[in-house]
Length: 221
Image (cartoon, rainbow, N blue to C red; front, top):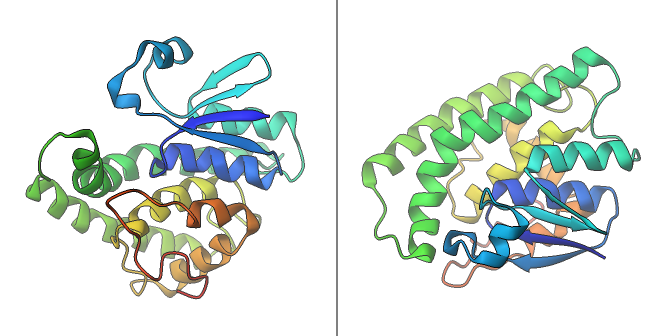
């Protein structure tokens, strides 16, 4: 059994969960209060971050490295293209969401409204929340532009780029922070990806004190 130390509303953990599920790998999910920086957890990952995956006698960290390792060791179904240019585009978009989108949107909305309360760090910073609510519009428009030209974010096949984006947006959707009416292309893409069997465990997540909206697990919104 593979074990994943995770947090339910971590986009980085969700990206790994989606990859494992798409590869049909059974996984034991272990909630990790990583912000407490317990000695056992720091032994597993001195960086003090989730996700951390235990696979046989390996302990692995960093979501992109884990996902690419999974794709290389379990090649079916492929989540990275074989063509170098196409693979570059997937990695570029994964970095876009895990870096730029995370810093401009996820950290400003999800972390301020949910993580702060869970970690006992006080109240949301209203300026940060406003900034995140403004920047997400730009990112949704960019995604819409990509999807007007492609079936999936990085091309004609579903890839890790789609999982990276869906991981962030699903966390934000849990807290009603995504305007799905802004782009028909993005809404159609998200409906398509959240209808996959690999998405089911994410839609079943429940965070104490933060019930999801009624549409969260609705495949038709």
